[in-house]
Length: 290
Image (cartoon, rainbow, N blue to C red; front, side):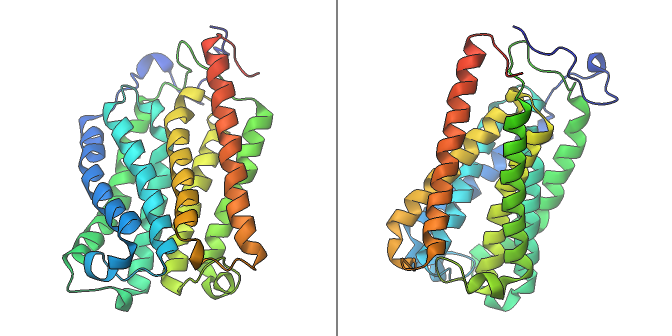
């Protein structure tokens, strides 16, 4: 296949790197999935029962379902990562997930009094989000040395316009995430549904995660590195939009921010789907985006 053979990571000897996934990283992916499945079930299918079943009472239901949508994306990613054969196929997911976990960990300690301390779900939540940032970062640091920085034998290199577009989208999401975390009161006043300072900071992590994913695709143009995490992002956005439909009564339908939120995510999902379909077609035809 015609791909730019010259694409390699800076300062990397491709021959010295095997692209393997260490066993500890694979086990981390396997172990986390059941927790995500349980959280998704509670938050998405039983959002009215979070006081009894979750770490804190999450209201309204859209806040619960949006967090659940991030978890279903995680279920998809970690399941695929458990069976992946090459590190660079899943590498772009680990730093964004680490950042997401760190944001939720910090938010937990900033709003400690809002949690249900006598609930086993709270103990699990705290244990997971204290450990997750370190485990995720550790897995990335250990495995990154195995990435040869080269495309797969059959691969596509994303063009600069595509990468620039992804970078703009990613940077925009990160800015929104920072505002939600650092200026929650400001964002609460304009948000499409009711937020508290805690849920604003939790939602900030859900913007930081895909924002960092898109930036990752900007700096690593290999389609083989982007495909799995991009699939996960599309799954998550689809569940956010479905959650919005299920929780439509939570939205301020007279507010422009409601339509900006729903419309923006809808446009983004369509754009990512088009990118996916077009790139996969070029991959099958043995062409690269140049």
